[in-house]
Amino acid sequence: MVSETTVRSSGVSWTILEPAILVRAPFAEAPIAAIDPYDIAAVAAGALTSEGHQSRTYLLTGPEAIRPADQVKVLSGVLGRNLRFEAQPDAEARNEMSKSMPVETVDAFFRFFVEGEFDDSSVLPTVSQITGRQRRTFREWALAARSMFA
Image 1 (cartoon, rainbow, N blue to C red):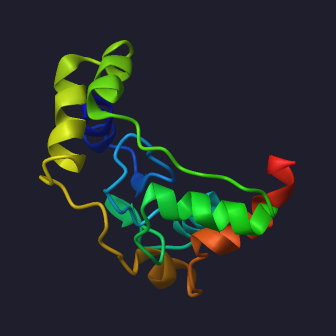
Image 2: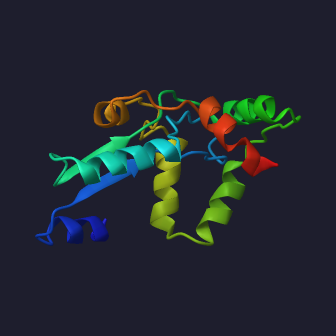
């Protein structure tokens, strides 16, 4: 990205956090190691308040790879509501995404998540390494965020 290149070449100390996506409904079969925003904040706090993080880029993931339909099942149980997941057809998703993104970006999403060019299901230990604690699972995030869904 242009913004990251600019930051890296600025001469100022920098740290970049790259969290995994929380929910991505168009790509129903793509498991993603979704990360809790709480864990992103914990890494940011650690990177800002301790030494050794300058000029580093950290890939952040949650502790499990989970498909969107499984996320909805977790939310259904936590909320005590009958929720279901419907996969958005690829053609419809492509059309909607094309309204707000360049065609190259849309094509990349489809190469990554439909054609399998990119695997976002890898679970990395970065959060635990920086914070010294376990990451929250999607279920733990849902329990903590339950009031937002009221």
